Amino acid sequence: MADVRIVIEETPKKAFASALDWPGWSRSGKTGDAAVEALLAYAARYRPVAERAGCAWNEPEGPELVDRLPGDASTEFGVPGQVHAPDQAPLEGDELQRHIALLTACWEIFFEVAGRVTPELRKGPRGGGRDRDKIVAHVVESDRSYARQLGVTTKPFPLEPLDREAFEAHWQAVLAAIPAYADGHTRTGKGWPLRYTIRRMAWHILDHAWEMEDKTLA
Image (cartoon, rainbow, N blue to C red; front, top):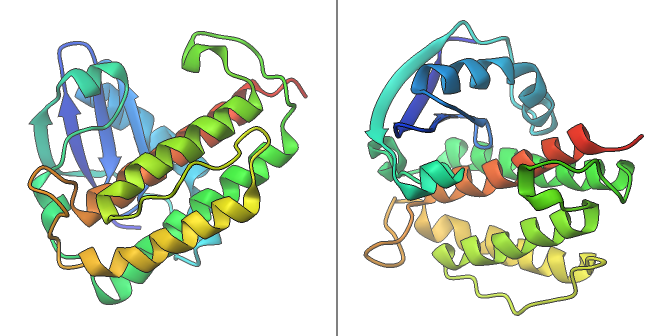
C-alpha cells in the first residue's frame, strides 16, 4: 500500500485522523500527531474490513496529510465531525462501489462481533458503560439519524433485541439512496456530502464494534 491519505481535525484537547480512502478507519488522540499514530496502529485491525470488502490490502507505508482543519465541540466530544474539502468531491463508478463494499463490511463485522461477545461487557468510562444490546441499539439508532442525510427516514423499530428484518429494510433503503448523491451534492444546505456520510457511518459502526471486542468478558 502507498501512503494513506489522511485528514486531521484538531482542538486544543482532542484530534481525529481519518483515512479518506478507507471509510471507518478513524482514530482520535490528544493531538493531531497522536491521532495519526493511533490511526496507523489500527491498520491491522482495519485490515479484516478491507479483506471482507474484497479490497487489496498491504501494510501502509505512512500517512499523506491531505487536509487539516480546526475541530469544534463535536471533535472534543469524541466525533470526527468536520467535512474536509476532499469529502465534497464526487464519488462515482468503481470508487463508489468500493466505498459501499467497505461500509457493508463494517456492518457485517459489527454484527459478527455482537454475536460473539458477552451480553454483559466490562464497565469503563467509554460510552457510559453500555452493555452489548444497548451498544447495538445505539449504533442502529444513530444510523437511522445519519441516513436522513440521504433522504432516508426509517420509522423506529425494535432494538432490544434488534429486529434484524427491520434493520435490513432500513439498510436496503440506504443502499438505494446512496447513488443519488454520488455527484457530491447535499440534501440540504448544511447537509453532509456522500463521502463524509459514508465515512461518518463507517467510523461509528467500527468504533463500537472494536469497543465491544475490547470489553467482552470472555
